Image 1 (tube, rainbow, N blue to C red):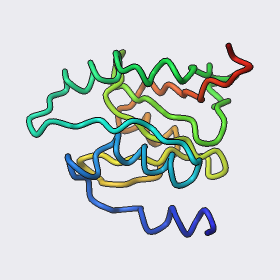
Image 2 (cartoon, one colour):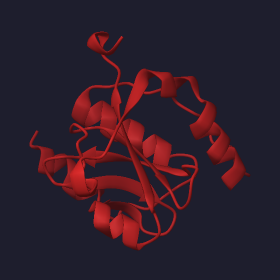
Image 3 (cartoon, helix red, strand yellow):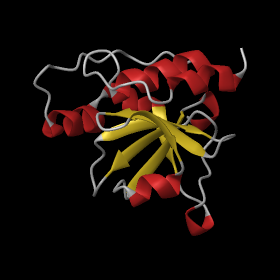
Image 4 (cartoon, one colour):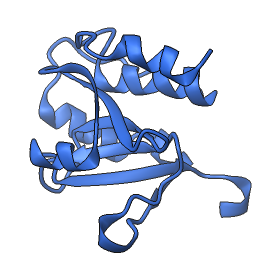
Amino acid sequence: MMRSDFLSPLIGEPWAWQSRNCWDFACHVQRELFGRELPQIAVPADFSRRWVLEEFAGHPERTRWRQVPDGPGGLVMAADGALVLMAHARFPAHIGVWLRQEGRVIHCDSHAGVACETVLALRQVGWKNLMFFEPVTCTDL
């Protein structure tokens, strides 16, 4: 399957707290495009921003990924398939996947559903702090 054949039909799909939230969507993209299995996280029906912040900050999966610093002028240096934690301020509350070939982050939120946006566009709508994480490999240890 061509990459665009997988990505194109996803754009605009609606968000759903139990089946198409940002984490479930990132897991789907990681599995289908990059062959990576990420843990399932049960999202409670009454989830809050605080719950999301605590899950991102303290989940054991985070130790399996290393943050990739930005390059000069904010250039994204992360590899294709990096996870992108997004924050309006300091603490991440949203996640997407970096698509290096497309120069965009694909993600799913409650406002737009699935979207594929540039880093600049994400920053313009309020995601001021974008953190890119690549999987830890044996050479990183």
